[in-house]
Amino acid sequence: MDKKRIYLSSPTMHGEEQRYVQEAFDTNWVAPLGPNVNAFEKEMEEYTGCGHAAALSSGTAAIHMALRLLHVKQGDIVFVSDLTFSASCNPIVYENGTPVFIDAEPDTWNMSPQALERAYEKYPHPKAVICVHLYGTPAKLDEIMEICTAHGTPLIEDAAESLGSTYQGRYTGTFGKYGIYSFNGNKIITTSGGGMFVSAEEEAAKKVTFLATQARDPARHYQHSQIGYNYRMSNVTAGIGRGQLLHLEEHKAKKKAIYEQYQAAFADVPAISMNPMNDKGDANNWLSCMTIVKNSKITPDMVMDALQEKCNAESRPIWKPMHMQPVFAACDFFAHGEDGSSVGEEVFARGLCLPSDIKNTDEDMEAIIRTVKELF
Ligand SMILES: *Cc1c(COP(=O)(O)O)cnc(C)c1O
Image (tube, rainbow, N blue to C red; front, side, top):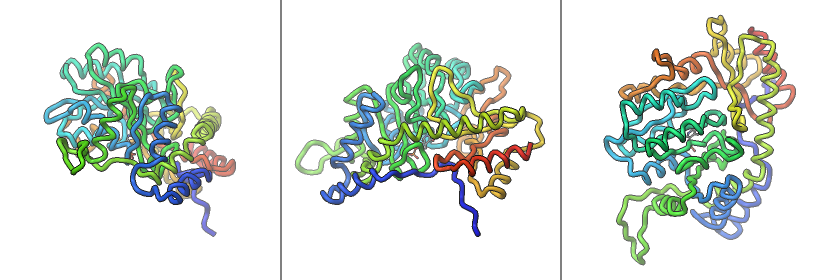
């Protein structure tokens, strides 16, 4: 018999999602926009305290819209976290801007304030800073915001992975001028695909909604004074989001329990460390990750292969840093170490993401832990 598949992070549905989707069908609000979209935005505003939200077709679209609002254009520099998914920086290139990659620091695996300072010495006038909260762990926001404020640079928070994470009691995504969330399939809550742009500025959310619906001027005929996008979330999709949002706290608690179980189980394995937390924050623990001590004979590939073969479990490498990507080979990079040593390269070389699905059973977790421990 085939062994049950253990997932990295798959969608977990509860039933309320279908109720909202059914409502959309019953009222024939299947087309874009409609009551679920408005309600989902309002419920996200209430949950995060972000001020104003615009529901979009993806988190990538939300980053793109944030850069459009800041008028990023040909030749503009944008500082962006290096240890991340390519969606954090691709939209810079959509606007013909130039990404400059800022290394991670070891305490949270997020943007290094030291590397950021050094980037300003060479590029004093970036158009924006895009800071990621990797795997749900909040970045060093105090330090990063202080640097951004000192230089007058707007901060965009890529909170795609950190919905529900807080820093000093406030939700990530609500610190920057603009913030973005993702509801992609494997995120902590999902709409199958979708994203959200958020800002304390009502005008910003309104402008994004306008641009995301083809930038149609208020005229009876179809008139356009700006280039628009078809980036709006649909009313069916938003219904899934409304049902999911009711369970975000529960998902967060289960993700935390998974992290703590791994942490306790590997406490007596000196070669293994778990991904770091930020002691000024409370992470959503979207993915639990481990790193292997330097000079170990065990590699991340060996752990991933063993999980696959012995547990039929899905794991994956740490995001490959952007400065190591062929497509960004020409872009500048600022390392955390003064000697040029990169934290992101280290984490990538020695780390992996463990199965973090909230539907993992006790037996699943025991099998995963046993398999990893047997290697060391
Ligand atoms: C998932 C993700 C995105 C993109 O979100 P989509 O909704 O998939 O477009 C952006 N940044 C990071 C860090 C992500 O993990």
